[in-house]
Length: 416
Image (cartoon, rainbow, N blue to C red):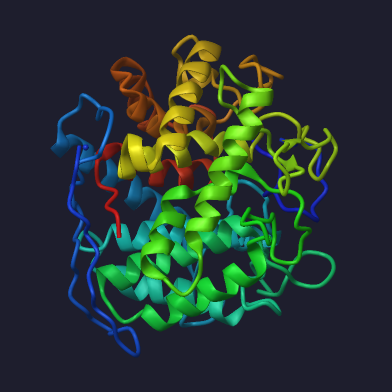
């Protein structure tokens, strides 16, 4: 079975272990507190016409059914009630990312994105979302963001040192609150307070994203480059300059790829000198030693994030994401010979495999949105077909990413 290293975080030193224009869907509902049984504004399936690219050749009905099947499996396996009676968390079962299959903020954020998107199909979605959010609220660090790793039995912080947060999880938690506000209403105050804390602690002075809320302002992690989230933040929270964050994130992508992966558009797991005009790959043993100067279990997610941004926002607004996603799609198709199983979790910036001994479904699955944005029908269809399997027996990480990629590829990923 393929497996991945424990969830990537700045302080966790590990070796490798293991479509076309649509109207905005935003609402103006606000309220003091979430209702217990609010109406669902965008019940699943809410089909989205993307701005660029192609959809899988499978019919819309079959795509929706595939998402439902995957969601049922994911929910039964990974969505757990606890640590308290009014809390839910996404278990890291199968990956060892937290003691006793406990939650990490990355997974909690994923869950807070998935559940609102499945409302209407899942009659209990709002109660589950509220439970996910309650756990976050009950486990904040000193900066008001989620403690990134918890023990599944004690529900206490499970890393060394002072509890801190991780940028990717906190980004998704913020986006989840916006999705919930647009879906049910009543989360405006919570969402804006969360985004204010995030902006204060996870955004460096020049606008680039830090790796964690108490980390240095000189490095960044490209797997956090969720530009569709940042654009949604800019529209939702006008009290902070999210467009500055968008612009700087796009600049880091462009500056880095021009120098280190001009033909492939790949970004290393960690990037240093992010606060300059010359960002570069981190040293191989910088934080997680996957190595950190190539694509690893962090940056395999970049094609998913940039492809999704291009699909939702188009080739003009999301020009950098669109151009980079097309390069990445072609690069990884070339590496794999068009077989998603042979997109390897560790890939050099020149589009060749660093190692072929480690395989994971999420490496190929994550290319799906980029393949769609690139308009590559055959490659899109091959990845869609793989989504219906779990060829390497992956656990929480692969199966949770698959669930979100399924929503995107099915055309069921609406823009808040």
